[in-house]
Length: 107
Image 1 (tube, rainbow, N blue to C red):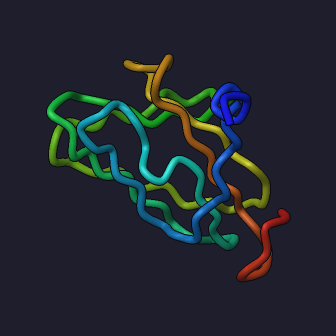
Image 2: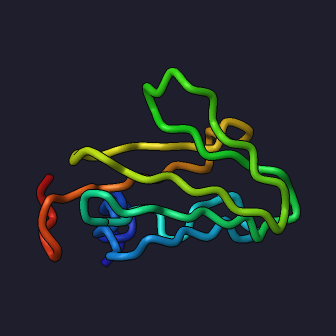
């Protein structure tokens, strides 16, 4: 039983949703989501602090989200897109898996 507590945490399975909350805890909830091609994801900052959403490798700057505000992004190509909060990169990470077919977990 003690060994199980020492095992590395498994990556969460993506949740089929187009909404991500930034609750009061320096995290994205859910951290991993799956959407279909062409869907728009909405991130809402429910925290007391300003956060951001920045896609890894995207040359465009991330979007700053003040408390109570939201930002959206439409995904026009399949793949796995990692993102983070530029203000809290040590704690806040997430992924969007964009699939070509509903219910599929492969791009």
